[in-house]
Image 1 (cartoon, rainbow, N blue to C red):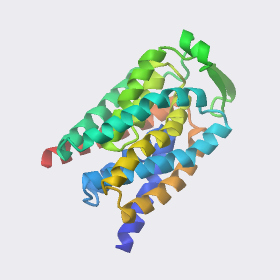
Image 2: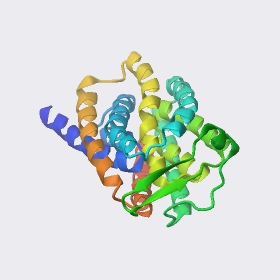
Image 3: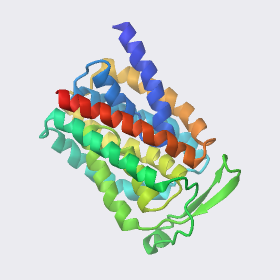
Length: 277
């Protein structure tokens, strides 16, 4: 049992690093790892995953906010939609068969990867207009990019579309316990045309709040098991702190290159698991 706990802890460190860099939360690694490697029931894995998402957010948020990469105004604005969506998704989870969750998870991952491929090698969005709502709420911003060695100023566009996608991201979080970071990053990067680094950092900031809304419901259902969730939380917290330092030194196109194959690999693993039953 001790060896299994240590293995879960080590995998959680990797999950924290990956989740922090890509803005996906530790759940993107934790859920498949617990189900595929350790045979944990999908609902218990989702419960642990939600805890890992909260830990990832806590571990990386400090560094990203300190360096002003996180857009707190955008995060708080969009959090309204994701929190309502997360509560909706958590209630729906009790009505959907576990195998069906695997297929939903896989399709969402493939779609996220496709959206990233379409962005190509773009480093910073250019010629982005400032949406009237973004202008009124002061959602635009700036940050210093350590990889490029210069300050980046950016606008925020298509606010309504981003808000709608964020509600969907919340529903996915409640259903699958993955923090839905892939949807959040996609909404800000693809729809609202924000820089990828700002999108991943803001996604990390938001995920903790969204996951906490769902975690309470999973806890009341008894799906959060301490012997699994504790090593996951500690490992992810360590990994997220490391990942926050690494991300700032990477270029956006490098982050995309990391993002796409991870999404595709895990998607096919989940399809196989769902098909096998």
